[in-house]
Length: 83
Image 1 (cartoon, rainbow, N blue to C red):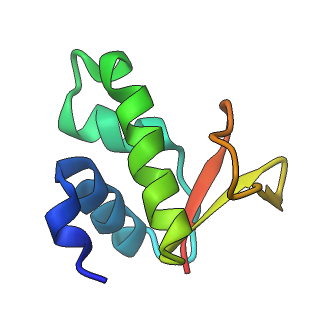
Image 2: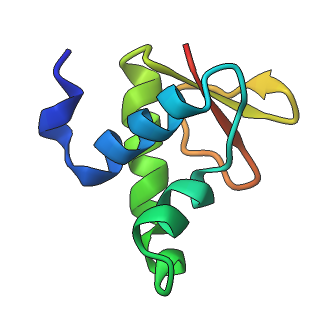
């Protein structure tokens, strides 16, 4: 799967996941990295990007330490980690 074609948030999420391999991170870390002043405006799009990566089996999304259900978009707080 070529995630590079999916957009900047998917690309940035994978880049952060690769940099933090072995360590989980918050989706807000990605948008704060890209948009430090307006990051809150991009949280919904970041969660959609993370869900796309999760559904492609490239990323784990955990809430309270458990993998989320692929059928719904979770509410924060969640943690992301590369597979």
